[in-house]
Image (cartoon, rainbow, N blue to C red; front, side, top):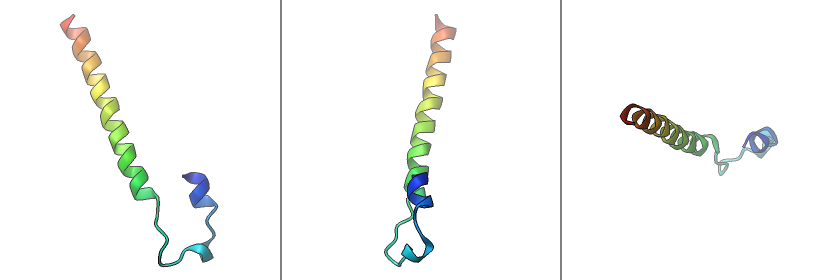
Length: 49
């Protein structure tokens, strides 16, 4: 994504250009939620064992 955004010239940004950052943020949030859930499950398994 960084290469795509950095490689885009300002004159290429027309009315139809879609900014990829909102979708990236959404997927980053999903990844973070899975990481937190994994840590919580691991901690629960340690406490319960």
